[in-house]
Length: 240
Image 1 (cartoon, rainbow, N blue to C red):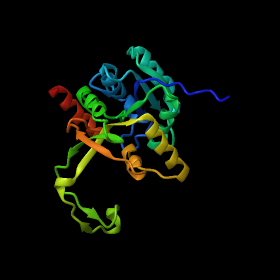
Image 2 (cartoon, rainbow, N blue to C red):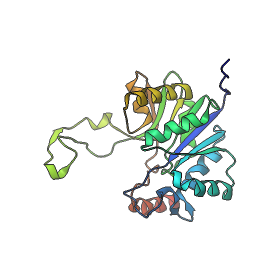
Image 3 (tube, rainbow, N blue to C red):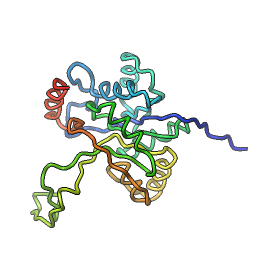
């Protein structure tokens, strides 16, 4: 008789931090870089350690830096980190690895970029509480700039405007993104079978007929992508 998966009512966070960070540079995973005295990933994990609604964390890291990640967990005394697992070729693969590592240890999962260290606990809480009558919840902020849809993504090839979407309907998507674990695992498995990739988990829910709710994020909740973002993050930290 096949064994039954473990189940409980827990809420887990998956923190993917396995990206190469090519635009950041520096020869190591960008979330290991120091931001005002502490590694970026430590600042990110601190928010989930402090969040009372989240009781476990799966950290997804580059395979060659798993030892470094585990040492940070011990050094900073994170008690909620259930596992540190290796990431995949793309972010979607890394999240999938994190989902499988949970192995039924939760019913709700919050996915948050390891490179967003300025996340506020109140947004994590709001994301979890909004998961009612929908298949997913995303934090996002209204777009400030006018957005143009172009004929190409490469300027060198000659780019022209195709259309200008109505700005009032546009949102810049962030994380956290919150889902029921079984539902998110289901769409990840479907996408893996089809070889389909998207830039965030909510898009997978949308692709397979799900309804995703938007809650207000924060313009401070920036993603560290380039070295210039470190400078901006330092200023924002001082103002918090």
